[in-house]
View 1 (cartoon, helix red, strand yellow):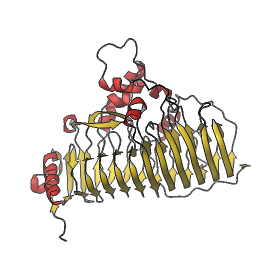
View 2 (tube, one colour; view 1 turned 180 degrees about the vertical axis):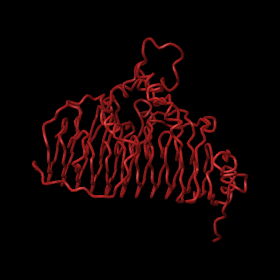
View 3 (tube, rainbow, N blue to C red; view 1 turned 30 degrees about the horizontal axis):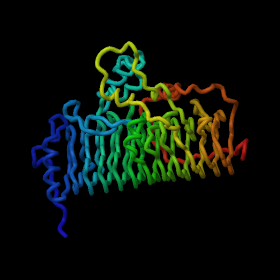
View 4 (tube, one colour; view 1 turned 90 degrees about the vertical axis):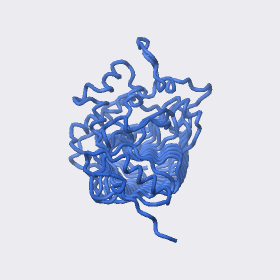
Length: 468
């Protein structure tokens, strides 16, 4: 067997000076490598690029001396059919795309810089007030903001199989960082994601995929560190593609909103194993979320050997999460054409759609502690099932939590508590409003300059005042 042939984008005209557009040269190297199932190697410089498309059999290797930097040119990211936040639509291509391919690897110790602040300003505005979010909230269109503020992802793997992403670092993503969609047999390993200070800068989104391993990753961002999804409402029910057989292990999460199952789960999520992970300063730890009329299911989830430090809500299940985002209503005073994305979002649900079924959840060997200096919100439990569709068979075993307040456990049938130890400082002081999901973000923003650096330390809960 012969060695793989290597291809250098400089041979095809790349300059790697950080200001010249190297998109065409890099893509030419990729296309040449595809003929030979070869390797593209970027080294020794900053390669400015728009969307790149990897073909089957290609190894895209980013040497530790190389930076792949995103151009600000919107036209450099052509619209492609995809799915965003659970809804199929045309969307700007990612910086690095693996679409309809197999046996692809993205490797090396180099950096992909999404240069996200340019894109974040479109959402928030340079002053934090003049962006699309503020305008849409005033018009009663909060639900449409994420879909109408069109920003590229960093890596998209879509309709592909046997893809590995390993060893690279990613920072300042314009939008979602790594999006795995409609794909099977995937591995994301030893990837570091940080400086994602902008809106909707999820770390890794696993979206209607099967047989996925996420391991030894360090993720800090301004939204879900990892999110497991399967489609939203009528559109997700039509596609009807489950997300299943997911293994997340030996990862560390810094700044972010935690590891989420949901909220887009209309196609269902099942057979998920989360183990040997650490949370350091995330808003949430393990989080399940859906909307009342979403349908779908989340079943057979195992969470084991988890350590949390300075996490506001270590265990959260919210089955009517954030109604302002999930309730689709076009204002009566809206004038002009209705965008296609709005039509898809507002498509009526089929008759008889029931709330999301959540059952057979095991949370075992979990420790959550707070530093004495921590002054943010703190609940031991944020469990809010629905009276007419309660969570079934939730087991907590050998769980030790230190928190300011107990929080809530509502809407659970067959709750099994064994070896649960709690240290609670005082009674709840605030009744939660389902639309006030951003309160912890506001507290964190007052304390944040850059995302909290991941610290590999294991917290130990103090002797519990309450045991089960």
